[in-house]
Amino acid sequence: MSTLSYARYGKDNVRVYKVQRNADGTQDVTEMTVCTLLEGDIAASWTHADNANIVATDTQKQTIYLKAKQHPVNPPELFASILAQHFIDEYTHITAAHVTVTVHRWTRMEVDGKPHPHTFLRDGVETREVECVAKKGQGISIRSGIKGLLVLKSTGSQFWGFHRDEFTRLPEVWDRILSTEVEAGWHWRKFNNLQQVEQEQEAFDKAWEDARKITCETFAKENSPSVQNTMYLMAEQILAAVGRVDAVEYSLPNKHYFEIDMSWYKGTKNTGADAEVYAPQSDPNGLIQCTVTRKGSSPKL
Ligand SMILES: O=c1[nH]c(=O)c2[nH]c(=O)[nH]c2[nH]1
Image 1 (cartoon, rainbow, N blue to C red):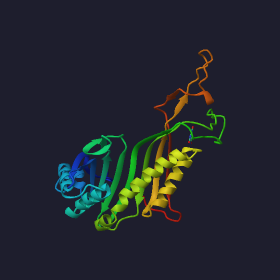
Image 2: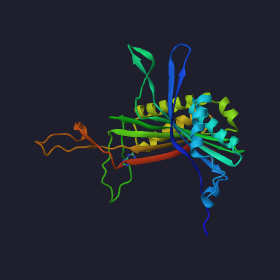
Image 3: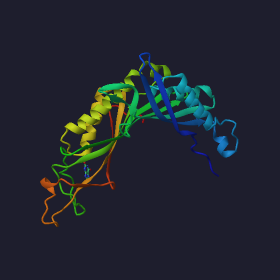
């Protein structure tokens, strides 16, 4: 005997662009990629080939476009909540809607020293991420985040005092290159309903700005003893800055830059204090992760 123990379905990689034409003649643009996944009384489609309760993934895509037309798409946390709430309100047999929104960068271009009214540039692959879950009668859970923020510091990083045994080859270092691609996430205390998300919407952009600033400034300023310690300091500060956030997560690859020994060529010095030319490594990389929560609270993630 077998049983369907997990089922969700929806539309992924729905690309949406929205323009806002302002009264002063300037325009604002938002480009995002949306995923919707529904849960509920849908098992019969898998087990009995009965599609009666299946809201087609094409319908979900059309709904994303329509909701983007009818409502603001910013902040993305609000747009994701509007969409998720729609699916559980509209369909009695849908009990949970999972919506993820990835916002891509379109940064206003400076032309002749001034912000251009309607021209933008993609300044990096970094994205703003939102994962939202609306469950019937259980409110709305939101996780916000940053992905793909690539940073490097050419000094101001060390790694020493680590465990050594017969398997250890790595030398201790008091000055190294540190580079990572930031993946950070913060979990908002649960919202009771869509109205509460709407009322508190100003917190979302502010939290994203704070998290990005804290991440960049801590990375730059700290003489880092390890990726572990640096990410903990970042998470602590985000918890202090954003009162409604209960947990902060980081996942940081340690993107290694290896010294190149050139002594074989006429005694060329290119290691230690003389190192100038390095070999960036695409793999393998360290991967350091953590979740930091408020003392005494154990949020359900
Ligand atoms: O910051 C670091 N943390 C580690 O755990 C580690 N391990 C390693 O080889 N290099 C580093 N760097």
